Image: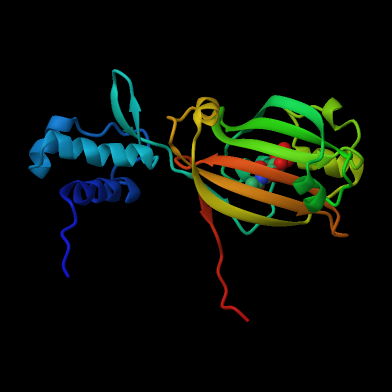
Length: 240
Ligand code: 16G
């Protein structure tokens, strides 16, 4: 069976190639739609479809009233390393930031009791933070920590300081191991508003359970990363 790759995909790939090869570096304003219509001999609708795809993939960004520009490259997150958000951003030369959206002390649900080795009735801190790189929204984090392991956590500067450093420096809880899963999801209205993406935009849901060297579970987190701002990199080895 032979299939013909739709024209808009061919054009999208040709434009993506110009971006990825560096022919159009970040910040370049791409040619106007009508110029691309002439260049590719395609309809305006087809060109628009190709561009829309590149915008939702995060390769291009539209600036109202000005044009369409090549976006900054995505942040490459090493998915096989246990890093705090702060460290991940610094590795990319971006200034990490946090905006605390809420800090609550709530009774641990059954699921959290199982994951964090707690008894029903134990309390957890539920901390919701919007994380930024160079002031641009990157991720929305929902983190949970057993109150008995880090009492008074809410009194520290959760906006200006790395939580992993606070746990290590103030409570002697160095996180050295984590189990995590990664799956695609779509932004619901609240998440979209906070992350500055359209409702339904692609996000990566990352669930993490992090432990100390003695195997004590300290954090359960559910984080939503913008699909247009990050990509995940893993190192593979032959099994065995
Ligand atoms: C990362 C962790 C998150 C943790 C945060 C601490 C993932 C998926 N999540 O975002 O669980 O709470 O780092 O960052 O990696 P901080 O130490 O900079 O506050």
